[in-house]
Length: 245
Image 1 (cartoon, rainbow, N blue to C red):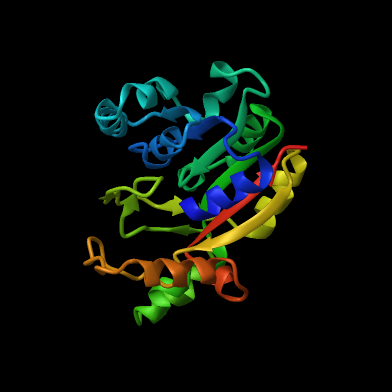
Image 2: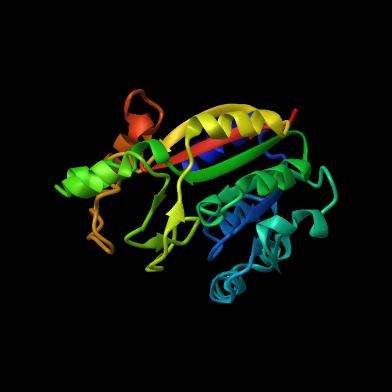
């Protein structure tokens, strides 16, 4: 995910340019902090007090220059119009958030509003076109059959929206279809520029499964699959990148 995001940023902005980044639903701040370390000015917006505390603790251990580049705010993704002026950011991240929002269109419109012209909108969503994959590969045939006709599912866990610690939630969440989001992004003036699959091969891994000592082959395989048809179409998650017109 980070590699995909960096690829899109590098393709749009000169090397070394300090960007204004908004991370909506930043979780424990994994991506926000990573981008602040790269020199960008980052605002993290999060409503969960536990996640905010974790992000602030992580930030407190960073050098002063990085701490000065990252601002953490308590708030909801639906409140961007309250907190920020139009065109305030060059990059807006919304990773693992829309699945918990029943009406995503107003949220997306608000995110596009705070993007500067030519700015990058990065979304990470659950892939509704692949909900049958996990139960099918696990041999849960009834679950697989039921997943074909729904866009809701009960996750076995939630991972912090930017790649951190798994958290069991026990509530139904929503998945999105790429075709629907493509139309929505066009309608809000941030048409889809490119998209990737995320967790093509690893979605069935158990929580806290042992991580291989040499992680590079796993990452290389996932990265290749995430940009290659037909593999990316059946990824558990979709990473969609829109560009503000």
